[in-house]
Length: 422
Image (tube, rainbow, N blue to C red):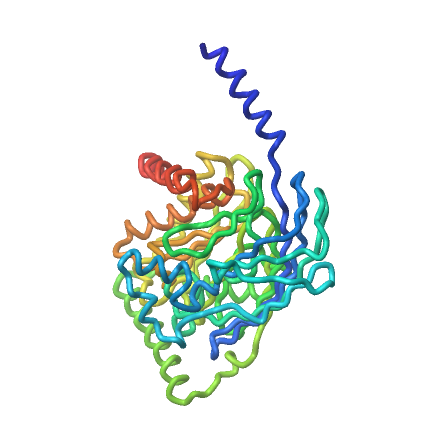
């Protein structure tokens, strides 16, 4: 029986592979953060390649910052269905949106319109049909008013979590288009491609994102200097550790109060820097920034490919005791998942301390944001779980909205394996 089943399964895989295709999307984005108005001003260029056997006449785009615009969005309606008034009673100034869009295709202005049911999805009509293997260049400026953190995208004061923030083509696969509104309970399905992103923001911000720094020697040197301070905290005895953290907390509170009382801008908040990130073979790009994070750095050696992966953790002084062993958690997570499923394919794994309200943590390529955790054991679990999502759904790239078991199910199973091995 086994001899009969194996050839059948092999034939099934071969036939499936023959019909399989993926569209390719190459992003080039320049964005500037205004940390007084809490806005993003940006320009996006996308090179879209049609690898299907179909001719395309339009492209669905996700404009997910509009999920935070008003009470008619799918996000707002989902909150109410689930019994939450979190969004309903959010003040207008704390909501968000995306606008200033002006799509062009290969230099030709094109028509576009919002989906009839979803204000965060739009249909962009192509000036001429896009044939199989054809490529077009899509360009648009865009402006994002960042909401106060309600779900994933947003800010809390000067802390920024920039996720699901740019105009993004929906997936086109063998089943056709997959336009979908943004939801709090419900994740994603995106095209693989490359990202080249330049981020301009005040120079006092610690920032980490999907991808590798390009010509980032100055920024890396600064982060290394901050990491030497952060790493040194772990060498202190408990009493000295608490004293050092209390001092850092006092300094950050003093800086915030001074700025609020005087409404004056420090030199660091006026002078800006532009940080350049680049990453291939991913399906999303997220970035996070905070002027007060403590920084730690480590490394993970991958035994099979003999590569070194850089580990970063960035957290607020008030959570320093909880995050003290965060580099160890990142290391062990990357190590065991690489053992189970093949080496981690990117150059850094980063965890940041956040205010994300969609759950205990949220994964993005190379980087995860972790909300408040009640204990070190829980923090280790959340970091391990979110790092694991770099495999499921990061590398797998399944439709999370329709097939949740393929990322959450497989990842939870691996979480059990992790604890058994450790």
